[in-house]
Length: 212
Image 1: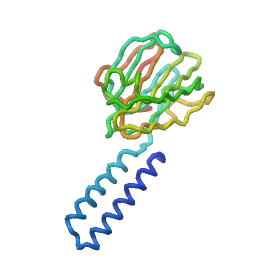
Image 2 (image 1 turned 90 degrees about the vertical axis):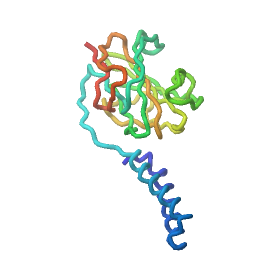
Image 3 (image 1 turned 120 degrees about the horizontal axis):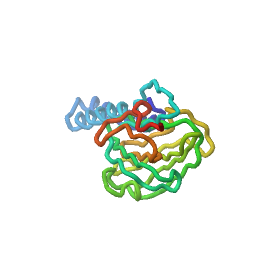
Image 4 (image 1 turned 45 degrees about the vertical axis):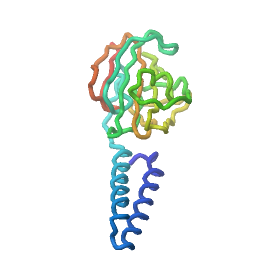
């Protein structure tokens, strides 16, 4: 279970206990029974959402791993101030996906930047540019990359534990986006893209691209 979800789980659990107790002392009245059942379902969903399964990450210096679970919704060439000539890969994370985010490559964190902004739907064309987001740039001997956690209409809480100059290993957990949204990964254009549009990906397991 992801520690970032403890407070959410505690709140929903407390609400469920209170509503169940009220329903019990009112003879199981539907007026209270239905809210207590809805709260119970919400508790189950919250427990499911904050799951944190162990994964056997295969560390490979030439691979760029997916930082999260989701579906690829955009692949396009861009110019990035940090990476240079690059390819942008965007993935959509639904509320049903595992939301633990993992570091795509091993190396050193070059910068971490948090930008406050809007909370448009994750599938909005300009969500990557205007929504609230946490941006990380990192590098190693082979490449520079950038990866971005982007808030959405439901996702209002971005968690990122990385700090500038941190040395991290490919597949390390580094945060999450609460209740779904999207992630961008900006990689060197020289990398060989190994995923396609609408392809499902898994954080720390799916290889997005390879540096040959």
